[in-house]
Length: 67
Image (cartoon, one colour):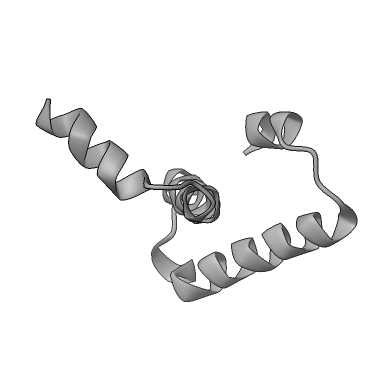
């Protein structure tokens, strides 16, 4: 998560939103969560937000794997 923070500048509200997201992920599966799994779920959560801003993402992925 630290390399992502180094490359993605954010405001205070952005940081608060990310910690809120992390809190929801940890609460949902706290009893079985390892650090690796927490890291993976957090990265997926960030990725979802990033992908939603990209145009034609699904088509690009399909074209990439269909080639």
